[in-house]
Amino acid sequence: MVLKLALCALTGYILGNFQTSVLISRLVYKDDVRHKGSGNAGTTNMLRVFGIKPGAFTFIGDLLKGIAAVLAGQMIGAEWGGYICGLFAVLGHDYPAFFGFRGGKGVATTLGIAFVVSPLFASITSVIGFILIFFTQMVSLGSLIGMTVFFILAVIFTYSNIYFVVFASVLWLLIMLRHKDNIIRIVRGEESKLFKRKSKMDI
Image 1 (cartoon, one colour):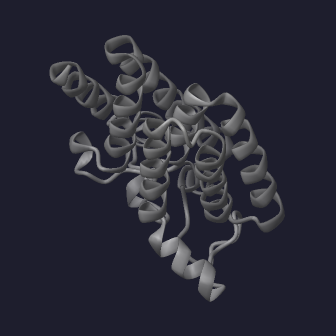
Image 2 (cartoon, one colour):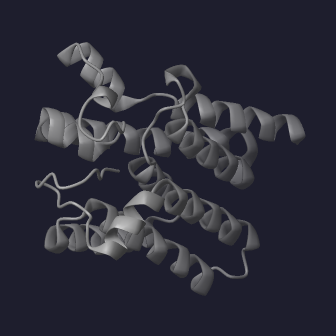
Image 3 (cartoon, one colour):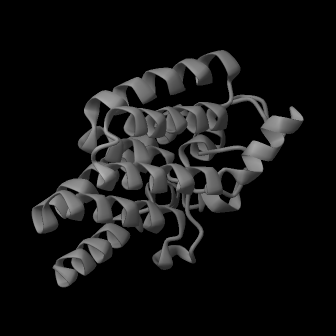
């Protein structure tokens, strides 16, 4: 069992190291998105620096690796394997060893994970998140509130499944930690809008 969980953790972390934004920016634009804009390897920075299409491909790529991580983990270690593999995929995305530990903030990858472990909760989370982003033009706010909704739904409706609640709690905590600077700017009213560069903000 321990070996299976270790394999899940390693598999998830390696998958997380697949930095979609960095690979696209290097292969297509001969540059590194982390040297542009906010310096973050996320969807929003790609969208701002290189445009809508690269941003969309980045989001899809990061979403798919979250899905792949959970499915791979479930094949190796069933339900627990999926949770471990998913969590380590987010860690690999946020802190990729293959890319100098400079990654993204894990939102798209986390959303991909959520769609596998709980399609209903993930759908509700996505709708709320995208509505907030549409009306506020703040990707960080939509991401933070959306993930908080996922966590709350897990606690209310699956409280009897302690493993899932702990899993959802760790996912939520990782998102909060990676967005701590965004949270401070939101509180101060200084967070930038999606297409207005007033401060650094990305997912």
